[in-house]
Amino acid sequence: MELAFILVYGSLLGLMAPYMISGKENYGVLLAPGLSLVYGFVSWTVCTWVGLSYEDFWIWAITMLGMPAVMVFGVRFVRERRLAHEPAAV
Picture 1 (cartoon, one colour):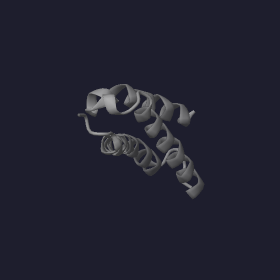
Picture 2 (cartoon, rainbow, N blue to C red):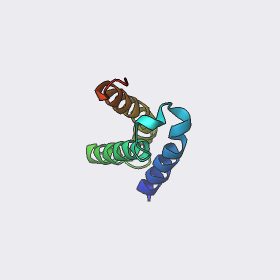
Picture 3 (cartoon, one colour):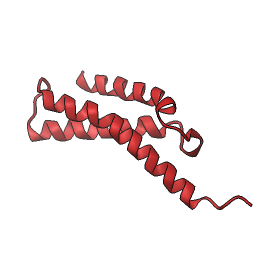
Picture 4 (cartoon, helix red, strand yellow):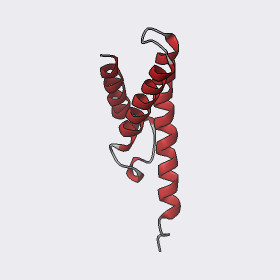
């Protein structure tokens, strides 16, 4: 059930990404929610393996605060890499 919250939260972040991050023509529509969802699932799984319970503050803080950060920095990284590899317009 908790992973359903992660899915909804990541989807909402993906809907807000074009308004939070400029230069949306240089990255795909699904990149931002994909990055946040992958980070959310991986961090939740790792925190569970470490032994944090679903009621702990830290599992929610690591996941919910990390998802938008990974989304913003990941999209900026991909956008900059694509712009750097584009041929210069003549």
